[in-house]
Image (cartoon, rainbow, N blue to C red; front, top):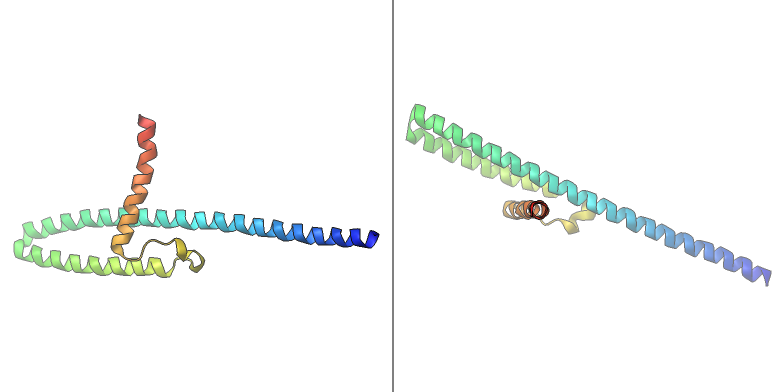
Length: 136
C-alpha cells in the first residue's frame, strides 16, 4: 500500500508541476503579447507624428519654392516630394511588417499604409474616449 501512495505522490507532483509550468507559460505569453501590441501601437503613433511633421515641412518648402522660383517649379518639386513620400510609406510599412515578431503576427492588423492609418485612428479614438469620460 505504501508503494501505491508513494507512486501517487510522485505522479501528483509531476502533474502539478506540469500544470504550473503551463499556467506560467500562458501568463508569460499573454504578457509578452500585450507588450508587443503596445510597442506596435507606440510605433504607429511615432509614424503618425512623423508624417504630420513631414507634411508640415513639405508645405513650407512648397510655399518657399513657389515664392522664389514660381508656380511651375513648385509643382515639379511637389510631384517629386509626393513621389518620394509614397516610396517612403511603402518601405516603412514593409520594414514594420517584416520586423514584427513572428510569434505575434497573428495580432498584426497592419498590411499596408491605409491599414496602418486606420489602426492609428483606432488607437487615437480609444485614447480619446477615456479622457472624454473624465471631463464629463
